[in-house]
Image (tube, rainbow, N blue to C red; front, side, top):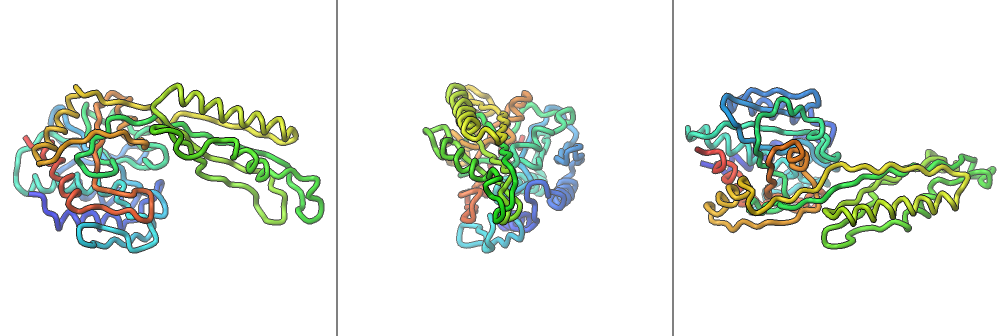
Length: 358
């Protein structure tokens, strides 16, 4: 039986372990120990993803990621009524440690009850928040599963993500000319000024119900008394529509060409690349049907939704693993107001347990 108190404690313990993207060493050690105690053989791949396996044919994959976004250091969780929040000026880290906790509790519950279950393969990836880098670099030669449930959706566990976008990143590098800001600024070319001219030429925010565009970071200059020579703009855009994506790529390139023509003594270069591809889960997908049936047996109505975010499932599906993402009880992810609803977290663990019980 799912133990709510243990589940809450697991989540609180895990979010206290700092694991911003690229710094997953400590959480990896903790999860390795927990998985070994559950009877799994744990083999990290060369990228640092955790792959936990056991004896049995045709295993079913349970997956979530280990890393969190910033600010995610020094998280202090607190239980308030039916919610778990962070009392520090940080995210909570429910994305994706709520998913990890639900998986661990389901396995713990079945072991405790001595119930029979199907063979399982657990995959906890790293650097998911950096464009699914853990999944991209996952050693798939070690993976046997052909089906996977990924606990990484925002919202309740009865929400099944059936459509996701294709995601493009772009990096624009601007090289001007340095000069002393107080002695000869007229001999300089400010890369920050050029960036400020370029950015308003680009779209921003939600462009339609399924398309977004964002400038995420701007890095320029070294000291306040020098005309800045170098500036880098990092951004992204995403949509399931190929036509829309092609149009946005052309819009970025056109804006850059306009700026190049205006500031001919500067160098403006760009890279645009696809991080992951869109997918759509059809109504006759056998795993989605099975998950929906399990959700109904828990007294809930399954809901399908479009997600503007990507997940490891995007990569798993490209590799031929039928993967479905469900909600993990986390809300307001990537913000300081993030919280996990405890009753939904219990349901996520119950759903996981139900799917792997014989």
